[in-house]
Image (cartoon, rainbow, N blue to C red; front, side):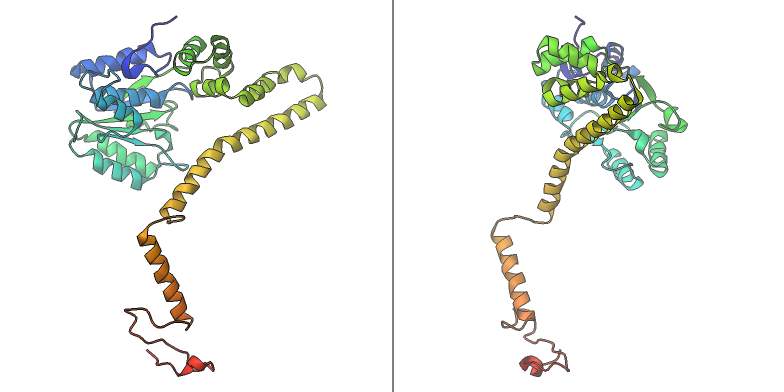
Length: 322
């Protein structure tokens, strides 16, 4: 068993060198800098490490994991920790400009203003230029934590990379992932070991495999594909099954997110709202519709007149024209 990190670092799986480096920066101000770039393959825990670092920077004890600063920073509700997660295909310049404007303020509760940009490789060129200007002239007590898959220029511009301290993360070993599943999620050790190995060190996938029996069956079917490739027909059939399995998994993954977003839009539009204000607004809309159709007196504030087309032949054609 490997030694587990403590406090806010508990969920940073299989990254002892990274944890030691970040702890050093928290404990010794001389090791601190204003911009950090977390890189690593999918599942390595880039954003997890960035959030843990942000919590440790705000914690008076350096990241004990129990104080108010730690818990709010890890949940994303700390007043001085701002997290940018792309909701679409890219992070636009308008969003980054607003973030930069708020990052220039002095901290209201913690020791630093911390800005975390997940998937920084998805910033547009204009957004990257805005971030670059902020990195060249950083406000005092503001720390930027950028997350990207690699240091390739297609992911992070060289100009931004050169102004950041790079923190490279690796794929966690299967043993470390299995240990986390047993300790944090209460998974059976045998199942945890299989899930970690089948997920290839990806913590999120391993947790899903350990919790979802259908996911385990799908993954096992994929792993068994090479054994069935004995002919061209078998290869084509296996390809069809893989495409269908990928589509089903994608549908299941997006269903929950789509439902939550739909409910949020409905709530913003007032669908299903209750209360006296809603009832009054409904009555006003009904009264306005009835007045326009000529079935009721004019509502208050309308001037008491109704415009009627001069060519109308209906009994209301004698109405007063506005």
